[in-house]
Image (cartoon, rainbow, N blue to C red):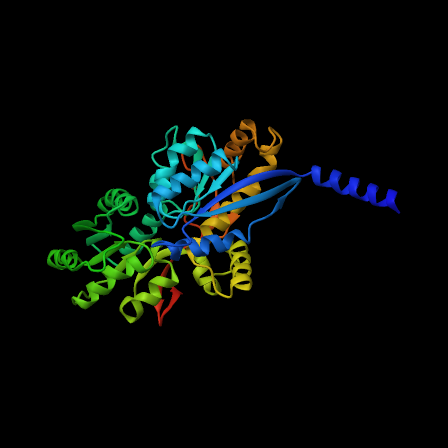
Length: 380
């Protein structure tokens, strides 16, 4: 009996040794001002694969309390102490921008579930180690321009965050609008911590735009929309995918009814035909999240889930060129993520290139509105 136990233990140890361990760091703002983003992102980690082929994956999760300084400190810790092979996070655009340099210096892949395209564009030696797991602003902007054009919009007011999210949105949207014959007659900014945008609303109203575009996130995007309605603005109010969150509809209430948002199909899956590419993956994600947490996932969780899909797709190829924990493996992992083609993710299809480290196109993005407190597909 003793010999049998020894043999069984030896077999178990041999089997365990057959699986190399990949360490993936996760930085999520589970507390602080960005917790509405970080909590669902942290939740999504529970849905990520723990085993990929002959590799086991260990996720090391930290909370940066929504503080960009802590994001940097935690990234350094994950790199130096935990010896991670890749990072998912941080949650916010400013936080991710602050971490870029250190991930590049460590030559370690970063999968950022953030809104701003500035994390990956314009491409340079630093950003080549970063990938963005939400569609780039250009993809969403194209959808918004198309929706505005169909509705005959010729003049537009813009209001966005005074940080990388809002700034990059204006930088991206303005030339596309000009090309489409849409004149931006007012350009305003506000802080994520602001509780009023009265001054900005006065200027927007004075410019008399036919429509307004808000570049904010969740409840923060509801603020200017609500105050515009209170001020008597009657034109259509468009939003970026940052508003594709239950918090936006909940906080805004009846005042954000009719908002027009370009965002992921996962919010309106019941209205999307089965023939749409990646719908099956989106449905699997929504079902798994709902089963685990008792609610539908917001867009923020999708960014982490899709980061996990990207890693799972890339890890087998990387393992052919190096052992987890080595510089060779990390370099090969970066290359394998960049080589991703035709990957069905929860937010659409991903085709990475050396110049496009987001890889999403219009497939998976739809025009939605708020109707009776819920998101609904706009079909015209």
